[in-house]
Picture 1 (cartoon, rainbow, N blue to C red):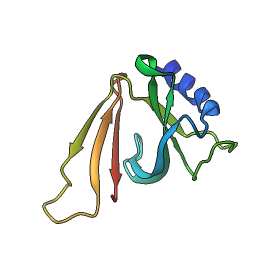
Picture 2 (cartoon, rainbow, N blue to C red):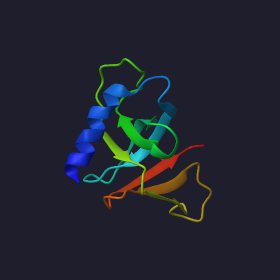
Picture 3 (cartoon, rainbow, N blue to C red):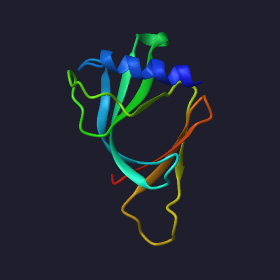
Length: 114
């Protein structure tokens, strides 16, 4: 499980304008410290057709192809489940909440303003 994550981090070097499907700022809840941190997420793809694989990489700062910055983390979307979550209270919230469960049973709580 851990080695797969490290392989994904190596793949970030191959991200380019054609392999990036979407990118932008989201907040991710920490695994150890349970606070929310804003991160720059990049949805990247590799391969074609049925062999296309998508992965998410996240960075501390805004990332562009050619940057030297290494991702803080990465996870594959193949076999992942994404579920929308209700806000923690009944009051109107400026956030949209969702969780990504990877095929490695890791859970990534994410929130977005839009």
